[in-house]
Length: 341
Image (cartoon, rainbow, N blue to C red):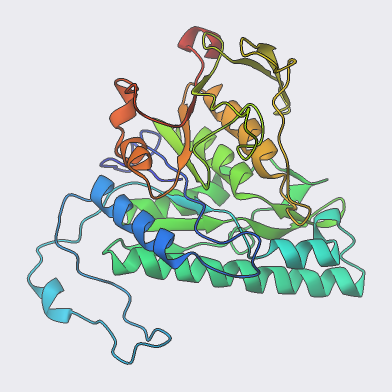
């Protein structure tokens, strides 16, 4: 999730968010899609920073590259560092899910040696991915700062995110105010009922959206959007809009549960068929739609779109807020202001 726009201490709730994902090969253990990550990082810079000149901030060595890219002179010539109010939240992808599912971290039981070891292994994995994403953004001149939910005091109760005190979320707000870009991620956290749990990036973004009141949220995925059936099936239809007055209407419960209330597509039989990988401990697209719908109920438009495409560029830049072009491919989830009130 990202927030875009000039922000002061008094307008922390007037931001524009997006959410980044689809930068790993989810079926290959701890494998980053380097090309997609680079494209997404470039798109974020182009959409959200005012300067076209890239002065990198990753001054550490990289595997296979002997030189360190430290352009000190480039910053001496700059009067200020480009700053924009946005947050990046990414999931684990092929990082963390395997460790968590093999040890049962998502089910709790921290007193068990296997679960405790899996908790440690999961956090090593997801923080490794977080560092690589922070470095990729920094190379594009984005002043990114990795922030792990566990270290920031996020916790759950019976697997559900608590109503976090403002002090927890204020750390994120202060980071933005200081001109940095917080980069949060799905994480293993403590749970006061079952000992531990997995906190997904999708859940994190909903709580940040409720606190920050952004203008819009963008979920970047590895498919064009939400389909009536798994996109690999020949009868799958891309659902361009979900909402009370769209072709596909859904009802959202207070707990985030959702159901289709107005299907108009043939052969849908009042349900959208969604599959979740066996190793995915966060619910996959099911959780994504649920959290996106809860965000939309706050009066915030949500766009689900394929990462590293021309369609994601339009979503990231805010271009879709005025009008959805006919040739844009993705899914919009929105509710009218009357419904939100």
